[in-house]
Length: 231
Image (tube, rainbow, N blue to C red):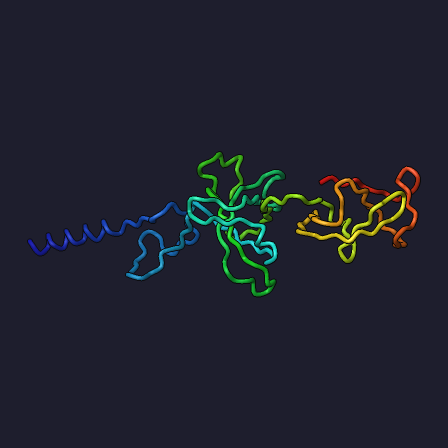
């Protein structure tokens, strides 16, 4: 009887130990077992992913890393990143993340630097799920990173930056070709430090003949257009 009771006690202990708890809040990605499955030590039961944060992997040119801010400790946040999924989310929906760290190795194919963006509460458990879009692992997203502030520059549309880092300017109804120093470029603008004044009249029309000193007219008199750029 004592031997049988010992076996019962051992069975109850084994049963109590079959309860599996994840050490963090998690989402089940894959499940390899079900009720009644027999498993042994070392068997893979499934795959979990933490739901406190998701990481988004981005690639950026190495030259642009100097304009990004990464946290120096766990208490700090890096540059703000706006994440959008234009194919799955409604227009105007986005998530906010923060730069977390550099991977430290270039992408094998593109030779771009890889960085990680930390997005808190990716499955919108802490917010109204009907208003906040959810991130899905493996999906492709677009990201816009808030870089460091630059001062004493003139912001100009990239289309108006001509060959050999020059800008066409109308000066006394004449074309003046200005060589400029470009500090930084993004998807839309070039940020110029030298060679272009803040009140310059930049020619926006693509001219068939480009030569220093040729006559120009404003849009009211001809098809040539110009734009006043403010610092």
